[in-house]
Every structure is written in C-alpha cells, then in structure tokens.
Amino acid sequence: MRPHFPLAADTTYLNHGTVGVAPKRVLAAKIALIEEMERAPSRFMLRELSGEMPAPWRQGPTRMREAAGKVASFVGARADDLVFTPNVTAALNAVLRYFPLERGDEILTTDLAYGAITNAALYRARETGAVVNVIRMPYPTTPSAARDAIVEAYGPRTRLAIVDHITSESALLLPLAEIVAALKARGAAVLVDGAHAPGAIELDVPSLGADWYGANLHKWCHAPRSCGFLWASPELQEGLHPSSISWGLDTEFASRFDWVGTLDPSNYLAAPEGIALLREWNFEAVRDYMHRLAWEGARHLAERWDVELGMPEEMVGTMATVPLPERAGTGHEDAERLRLALLTEDKIEIQLHAFRGRLWVRLSAQVYNDMADVERLAEAVLRRV
Ligand SMILES: Cc1ncc(COP(=O)(O)O)c(C=O)c1O
Image 1 (cartoon, rainbow, N blue to C red):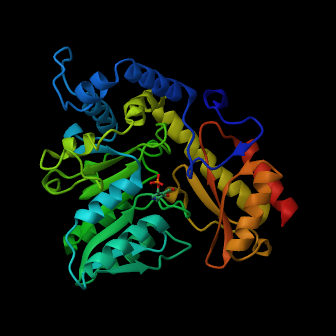
Image 2: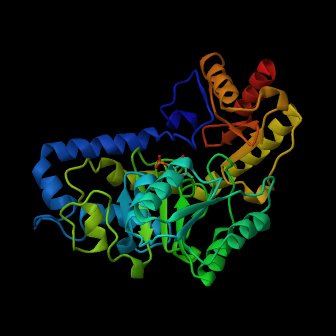
C-alpha cells in the first residue's frame, strides 16, 4: 500500500496517529478542487460553496453540505447535524465556549486526555470560575476499570464531562457508549474527543448517546490536513457557534459553520475522496489489517523488550502503546533524546513519551506499515538503551 502515499522512502513512519499522511489520490482531488476554484473564484466561493448568493445552474445542496453529507453518512449521522472544522481542537473549543458554566461548576476530564484539549477546558474554567477535575486513570487497565474511574468521579457540581473515544498517548479505546450512558444518567453533559476514531474503528456517532462529538478526518480518514468535524445532537445546536463568528450568526447550525469567512475549503471538499478510498480498499479489511498490526506489533515489541503491556486487545484500535525497558529513562528529556536519535540516525518517526516515570512508544499501524517496520523499531531501541 505504500506507493499510494507520498511518504519519503528513507523513513519508517510509525506516527500516523500524531500527524497523518494523505494518500496521493486525495491530494490530487484537493489540487483539482483548488484548480476548479481558481478558474472562477467568486462563483465557487460565494455561490457554490455555502450558498451566500444564488447559483441557478446548480441543483441540490451546496458544495459544503454535499461533502458534509458524505462524511455524515460514513459516521452514521444526518448531514444537518455535522459541520466541518479545521480540526478536533476547533470543534471542542466551540462547544467549550458555548457551554454555560457558573462559578464552582466542574468540568470532568482525565489525565489520559490530550493536553491541548485540557488547556481549552482550563481556559474556559478561568473565564467562568468553573474548575477542571482531571482524574487519574488506572493503568494498566481494562474497559470496566476505565469506565468505573470516570463514572465514579461524577460529583454534585459536574456539569460537563470530556471523554476520549480513543485516548491520545496511551491509545486506549474506551467503552464510550457505556461511559456516556452512565454520565448522562447522573446528569452530566458529555463532549467526546473522537480525534482518532473516524477511519480507525467502525463509527456510528448518534448511537453513542453523547451530546457533542468532535473528530479529526486528517488522521485515520485520509482527508488532507486541516479537516475535522463537529457533530451536535439536534436539540443542542442552538447557540453553538464556531470560535470565529462570521456571516452565519443567527442562521442554522450548519450555515454558521459552513461560511466562516473566506477560508480555503479544499480540505473539507476533498474529505469524501478519502472515504471513497477507504471503501474501495474495503474498510473492514483495512481496519482489520491495522488493528492486527497494532496488536501483534505491540506484542512483538513487548517480547523483544521484555516488558508487559498495560491493556487488553479489546482496548486497541489502530495504535498501541508499549513501555520501553526501564533502563531507557524516566522523564521528558530522556524521551526527547531517544525520539530524536531514532528520527535523525535511524530514520524512524515514532511517538515516544514519558508517562508516570517511564518511557513509552505509541505505535501507529497504517496500511502502509508492516511487521518489518515494527522490528526495525524494536532493534533500533535495543541498540540504543
Ligand atoms: C485525543 C486527541 N485529541 C485532540 C488532538 C488534537 O488534534 P488536532 O491538533 O488535529 O486538533 C489529538 C492530536 O493528536 C489527540 O490525540
């Protein structure tokens, strides 16, 4: 599968989960869209894109709604409930900015959440006098231990919980529907960080029961960067705006987000090409290949490094996090030194971080990876630590 991607031939790229690479065909679709746009820029941007002005030559939905509809159908949603955002960060910031909070209210999140998203919650808490409760998650873990830790942290002032579908550095697929149901039964609103879910696992967003679901399409869904989405349950769309207010103020949910001023829409409009490719490649087979490589790869690394994995297979999607031998170091500086050496000297790009006094790698398994990549990493680390 590697020839489908523009990756440099001299690098072992095991970091798709951090910065994904778009397939060549998707990049070609994006360039074709840009060329089409530049042939008649005003017509495309003002009349066809989101319907700011009439386009009598076109039938059916605007370009943005057409693309959003294709993404929505891939994740089980209605087109009207899904809007494009540049990334999941923008999607979650929009919800945080709109969600009403008072002094002493609590936003619940975990120490496995992505740091930048926790920052967004902290910023909102500063503005409102709310507090952010970052709970310590059990690790090693199981689905029920993870679920119980989050649900039991619900308290009388919890108003909003931010829950990961697949956690970031630890790469754990959480039992999201169960967590959402329990939190909502207790009275919390639930905002999901689904950064790593679309294209990595089978996804039916509305059935998860959350209030809002933000995600990236530029990681596992093969969209060009920058491309994410925000799904909002129909009764929670009023008052929810993008972080930059534009002409959509006081219009419907979708049109508020479809025209946020003159931004390049080519990534959004090319997103359906990534989904078309996944379907052509047989999405089920692709998922199965990536999952097996992540899990078997993690087991292989654990065996080569003589370490224990901290999660069962059911918590692994397309990424798996593996501890390094203890002698590799303990802190951020050790992690950065080793990561840089792997990159510059061994030409291996891998997410490598410090967590709870130990170093870990997060292995990303895309269709262009195979076990030879994993073994190259195993061997390079053993040579260095
Ligand atoms: C769980 C999680 N949330 C949010 C993000 C942020 O993604 P972006 O920078 O594309 O908004 C990441 C990035 O890796 C992530 O892992």
